[in-house]
Each structure stands twice: as structure tokens, then as C-alpha cells.
Amino acid sequence: QQQVKQSPQSLIVQKGGISIINCAYENTAFDYFPWYQQFPGKGPALLIAIRPDVSEKKEGRFTISFNKSAKQFSLHIMDSQPGDSATYFCAASKETGANNLFFGTGTRLTVIP
Amino acid sequence: EADIYQTPRYLVIGTGKKITLECSQTMGHDKMYWYQQDPGMELHLIHYSYGVNSTEKGDLSSESTVSRIRTEHFPLTLESARPSHTSQYLCASSEYSGSYNEQFFGPGTRLTVL
Image (cartoon, rainbow over all chains, first blue to last red; front, side, top):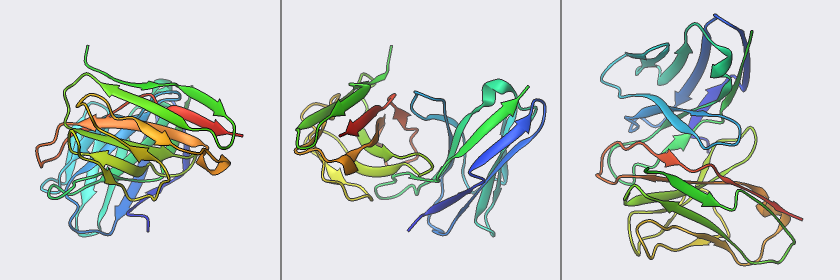
């Protein structure tokens, strides 16, 4: 059973545009929601993360929006650049216990000049 | 420089061979993980370890085995490789403090079993 559902599978955005990737989860025990960025030939790297006590977190051009009641969270990339072209994975975990990460299926973002 | 290393990066091998994928980290992290990644699919956790002499199976059933004899080393072994084992294998590590911890990933090993 997939713990975190991610959409879209792929996304093409014009340079300067806004990229939006959405994720949804079912387990209400999850309380940590990171986004990872993966370039070809590399392992994923943490981009930004949020905890459910806030509804939004912004770091530079990257923003996470979190809707606890809907059990959804999304990544917004403002002023998208060709260098942002990568695969993005959302994930979720809980603080207690094994606190292993459950990943979404990934979104391949292509930013065209 | 703190980092996490995986070798080999690419491996093409015949059915029935025994293989070991190496993973080492220099960050002194207690917790280490092995993930399997296929195109268009989520990263599936196949093994993890809380520290030396600790190993646990992940969410995805795997025929591989792991060992943790040293903190920095977490090798994965397939006793008899099969074409169904063809995949990308990612190793990661994090500090273990019972709280949220960033996972640091290696570059991966792409395994092809003929």
C-alpha cells in the first residue's frame, strides 16, 4: 500500500514560471514532510521540509504548503530555472518509533528556456 | 569532507552470481538504510540499521541481506542474483536521535542482472 501519493508524474514548465507538485498521505501519525531533489546520476538530497505545526515554509524560491485537514502538502518552485530540472520526491515520516521515510513516486520536472 | 560512498556505481552480472554492494559514510551516523529505486516508482526501503550489530528489514521484501559490523560500513549482499534484482540501489545515513533526521544519500549502484 502506497503511503504517500504524488502527482504529477512529470511536469514541463517554462523558465520563470511556477512549478507545483502535490502529495497526499493517509497516516495521521505522520508529522514530518520533507522534499528531496534528485539529479541524474546522483542520490536524492534534502531540499526543504515542514512539520504540521505550520501551514507554509519558504526557503528562497521553494515553498511548502501544508493542509493538515486535507492531509495534503505541495511544493511550489517560483521563478523556475533550467537548473531546477530534476526529479522531486515528497516523503513523510513520524517522529516516534522507527521514523523511516515513506516516499512518493517522484515528479520529473523539466524547465525549458 | 563528510560524505557517503557507494561502489560499484554500475554493475552488470550474470544470473546466479553472488554480489556485494558497498556503502560507507564518514559522518559518524548511527542509522543507515538501503533503498531500491525503479523508474517512476517510489524509493522502497529494503533494509535499515540503528547501529553496529543492528539490522532490520524494511517495507519491501528483498532477497538481499545486510551486515553492520562497523559504524561506517553497511554492505548489501545478494547470494544469487536474478534478473528481477535489476534495479538502482541507494544507500543513505542519518543521525539517530529518535527525532526528525535528514537522510544523506549516496550516488547509487545501478545493477543489471542478465
